[in-house]
Image (tube, rainbow, N blue to C red; front, side, top):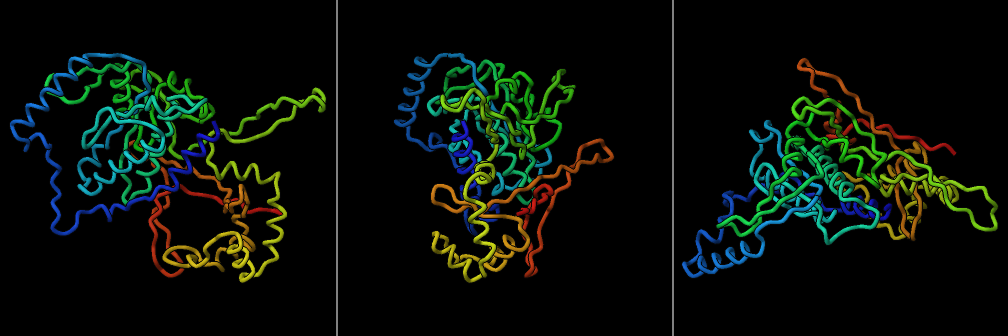
Length: 384
């Protein structure tokens, strides 16, 4: 299960993020939506397409199964102000994240859609609810980090999913309680950028069963619901290992975060490995020695100090003097690790809506600004 979590986290972090600016159409490029090939097809092509549809209608008249479905939609404010290049970025990100977690689209329109788990891409010990809930979190994280943030509303529910091949359509149409409930949850979410679901769906989580949800009374759904912060991770759980035959009857325990990212797992594991010895050596290095040591371990230090990246001296100061981060080695690779706590500072506005304080931008030493759109963070300084 941890391997699945680490793989999803690593893939989502490593994915090349395309900025909204780069998604703007080039000068002279048409921003009109692509026309369906059927509109410009010849009479022969139309006849062929019609025969294919008829065949599909015969073969796939109707089916029903239990599925976990995610409904996403843009908030009313975002729908009124979003531009074409931003909307294109939203759909590009959704497609990329679906591929990462192994999900497929059921319904897609410009402002909303339905997604479910791909049956052919299942991980052992991971429920469909785990996959779809994590997908909702990743989508909300991306939307929150855009400038300006994109108002995204997410609802997740498990129920009956029905499919029907309608006349004149070349793909199945979906309906059923799972679609209806997920759409209702997205619409009635207490705020943007949270994953909203029923307690019954939450109970089906396996990897993320210890996630901390906020419960509230949903007047629109007329029942209790819960929602998940996009940055929330699973809390620590103690796992009892079976003792070896020669170790007596006393079990030994090991703590790790089932729902945490790969870096958080590195932190837990490095405390009992050679991290302290490595760190002690680094603490005695000069900036030049530190740079040479990184190069010997396969780190390209020529990229330090370029654009908004820290310089080698700043990196050395962060580790040696400020002790805001440290380096651990795992599987022959170096990892820079920061132990941090995200801070939720919430206040209600005059309308009673919860408002979360976030860092909108960071002003660097050279005077340039970098958009952040992140929650407040406190870094833990290491003590040796």
